[in-house]
Amino acid sequence: HQFVPYFEPQVDLATGEIIGFEVLARWNHALSGVVGPDIFIPVAEEIGVIGRLSEQVISEALREAASWDPAIKISVNISPSQLADGWFAQRIVRILAESGFPAERLVVEVTESSLFADIDLARTIVTSLKNQGIRIALDDFGTGFSSLSHLRSLPFDIIKIDRSFVSNINSKRESVAIVRAVTTLASALGVPV
Image 1 (cartoon, rainbow, N blue to C red):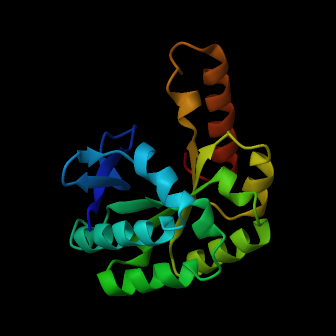
Image 2 (cartoon, rainbow, N blue to C red):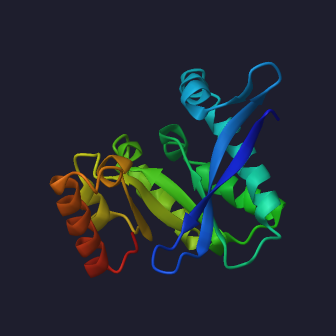
C-alpha cells in the first residue's frame, strides 16, 4: 500500500471548470520519498505486477472519489498487459462495486500502442466496459501507426492528443496543423478532445 493515487485536474478550456481528475500512481517510499512512475512502472511491467499495482491504485482512487461531486469524472490509465487480459473488464466491475463508485463517472484510458497486440480482444474488453456505462478514452492519439483505423473500429468516447503535439503548439506550425486536423476530425465524429 505504498503505491497511492494522485489526482491531476482535467479542466474544460472553454469554461475553466474542473470536469474531472486523472489518477496518477506514485510510490510513497519510506526512504526515498515520493517516487515517480517513470521509475517504477517499467519495473512493475517487467516483473508482471503492473496489473495488481494498477488495480490497487484504481481501487483506492475510486473509494476516495466516490463521495465527490457527481459531475466529476475520474480517468484511469491501463497498461497494455491489462488490455490483453480477458478478465480485465470483470475486475474493473468488481472494483466499482466494492468502492461504490458509479460506472458512468469512470473513464478508462487506453493507449494507442496497447491496441496493437490483439485488436479483437481489445474490442471485446472495450465493449464490455462500455456496456457497464464506463467511458473509454484513446490516450496518446497520433503516436501509433493506425490511429484512424482505431477511431473507426473502436467506440471511443474521448480522444486525448499526445503531449508531443500539444506541448509545442505555440512554437511549431506543424503541431498547430495536426491539432487542428485532429480536433476537426473528432468534431465530425462527435467525440470530444
